[in-house]
Image (cartoon, rainbow, N blue to C red; front, side):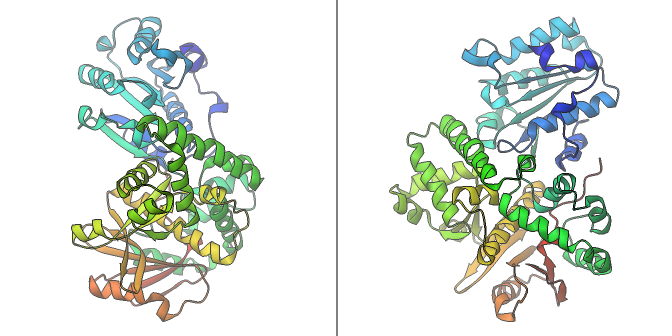
Length: 469
């Protein structure tokens, strides 16, 4: 079984069938962490391409001259482990005896152990910790379908020994790389050449001024970029979308393979949820009102559960990256906890599949654009350990607040062509109250600057830097 799974032992290369022609941004981050000794964990919801990333890392290692025999991969969800007959220890011992022919401690070169879907293996933390502590030449690269399973009890045992890389559904700029490959009408390389290198949220002023200088070049891409936005708002950010052009079939895949399995195999199994139908109803309620304000008591009352259960179940869905919860910003932590939350389904494709929405109208596009921007901000904040909130004070609000620790960055989403001053009352109020010098308005087509507020079309908004691979 190990020989079949590790075909590079015989061929010296990764079978092309396990690879993609384009790579996620996270591959660059993975390689930046490869030299360090720490365990590298690749974590995210199912079907976001984590297994493909593992094969791409192995491919890069082989091309860099790593001995194929020094790379081993196995899957925790394999029939090998059914019934508990095999353990990580027995699999690694089989690898050592059959391939290395001497103990790892005696190796004078690095050994790479890849374990996909590691969360299915009981006691994996203890074994990984023991090997890590005794064998400085071993590099573990592990993956799991979501943070809920990956780190049940792992944080304490692997404290100071593990680095996490989240692999979430694509943000829009990541989506475009795959869109450019599979939809030949869009030239991604040309887009990357004229766009700012970094994120809109890093330095909005510099980002805006770059767009202004490249306005003529970007105008030639406007039609294709707008088509990409419409596709992204409808289909979401799961890579598998690009293997089908049928929206109804795609929504069926999302419902059966990601929503149902994400709920029933992941959350229900690992948290021992006794009434999974309640969890499902809660997700559907959030989807029907994605981006709305909720109190946990109100959520619970709607579906017949108490406040504590509603809060716990929403936390499960958030841990599994199925929903995103925004607290109402306040410098007073007690007020933050007490105020209503905003809850979004974390991927527009999933949201649309749940409510059977295959033709969003212009009003719905506004909600979807707001959700897309929230996910863009979430990816940015998780990477940099920043806080992410919304803000409401009486009758005014701001969709997104990024707490950069040194200052606050408010972001308002107005996915329309005409934006009046009254539409930005919340943004003005927040900037005045908290002395924020800079604000962002994400629009449909408007690109302009008014004082410290920068208006940027969604099609030109990026969450992160372009990968350099």
